Length: 229
Image (cartoon, rainbow, N blue to C red):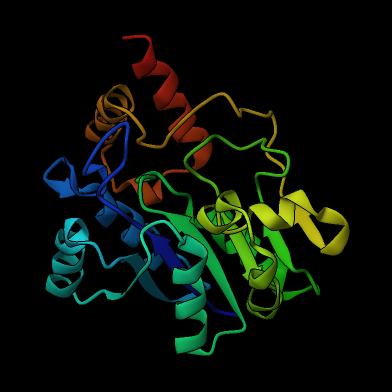
């Protein structure tokens, strides 16, 4: 089974503005995310879901320049963006991915999709509870379950964090959680601050092949080596 990957991206991050287009080894952070998804066996296509705000025009420009599908919606109502993509593409499922994680793991994404496709799950995740490092989070969502549930997303938290309602009401949904051993939830491979950006830059610059070809364990090893410097 192949499924659509939806990357949520915006420029107005509070802690590190413009982070998705900040460059590492000459390439913007979001480009590593797209490449990792294209390296997956079970991703049919990639759509960047950004906002209609003028501040996010550079993301649209990047997508247009690199022939990446995109859709624009509300800045704060991220669930609305996902809803628009799901309805426009008529999909049965989607993979939710954040644009600030240039070290995503294709093997984990493929495993999540295969797990989802072989069972009748509403959500397959690796964050409930988290045992994987931050920055390799993946969620495969049943589009029908999502679309029928969005009317229940009445809080700002549920509208901004697309799958939060599922986690807050696990009794309503069939959720499967992938586990990583040994658990390393305190390790962050995402770019959320200047310090994160500096560390991830060091990790990527030390690699002798593309980041998406490295396993999670190899990335953790590099993280530990460079976080000591």
